[in-house]
Amino acid sequence: MNVALRHSPSPNRALPAAAGRLSRVAIFDDLAAVEPLWRGLEAQDCLTTPFQRYDFLGPWQRHVGARAGVLPFIVVGFDALGETICLWPLGRRQAGPLRVVEFLGGKHASFNLPIWRRETAAGATKAMLDAIVAQLGSSADALILRNQPRAWEGIANPIALLPHQPSPDAVHSGKLLPDFEALAREQISSAKRKKIRNRERQLLTHGPVRFWRAQTQAQAHELLAVFHAQKARRMQELGIANVFDEPGVHEFIAEALTSGIASNPAIEFYGLAAGDTTVATWAGVAGGGRFSGTFTSFIHNEIATASPGQILLMRLVQDCCKRGLATFDLGVGDAGYKEMFCKDVEPLIDSFLPLNSSGRLAVFAAQAAFRVKRAIKRNPALWSMVTAVRRLRGRLSSGK
Image (tube, rainbow, N blue to C red; front, side):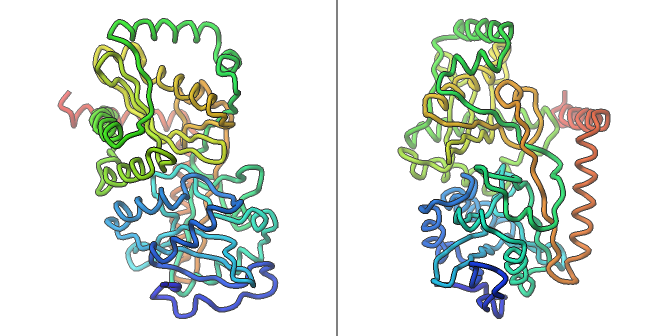
């Protein structure tokens, strides 16, 4: 087993007693080597989000991270008995002359959180966090940990004990009820519910309406093809770079969706059809009683006036209620459609930590950049200008 990063001369030295239950840290640069520890920790009563599952980040690293020059940098903490008590799923990349360490998953992970044994997270101290971070300085220059929840499942995020700042965006979520109709009455006005019913009747004029989750390889690949076509057109209209066309992204999503598709896939994919036409798709991850919507698409023709994306969202939330899930979210950032079921705002934090003198400048620049980004997004006038420029660029690139 490759228990130490090749560039780290002494990753296994003992930590000070002030670190509490943590006794030793190892850094892995091989996903296969760390997989047994990763899956073993997942099988325990651990604090984690679905975005840190091995079945989600393993495919991401193989298909996306590796092509982008990201090397695995998996930090594992052990207690005095050799038991795994935490795992930080990180990756290292070169930013000019600097070695920057970040969470694996990039833009495709809504939340980032190390995997903790629950009692370790609940009893974490700043001394323990400082001791872990101190182990990384010989192998990296800066630690940039973005989009972290302040708390998860009622337990404070241990990394919030370290210096941090608010993320530019928050996550919008909402509590679910076993009775979907009761939830809809509680969250959506009667006028809005009537409007949605009218649009459902409008959609029915194009053929029988069907909602389903991909549960076979064939269903998965069919939905993926529709999603990629619909998403490409939408991103061009908005003038936004299509992250789904970046190298390896198609392969990552396909593997995370189809691996274990009949039981517990890392990504779940849903479709809505009118007659023989798939009019909208929605994907997400589920775990710990929560569903997190990640990406969606809808058709761009006359059927779009029936709001198929909104109808699919209704069906998806209804399905989550039937499954007994407790929380539903639609990922990072603001959007009008999120207000229907996701009225709670969950703030996120970013940690920018220099690991040595070389990393101080990189951390200062990153902190400043994300403060500016947050300020722009919090200013309606400035954000409207950014949105208008994006749309104009999209129209110009499409020749419209």
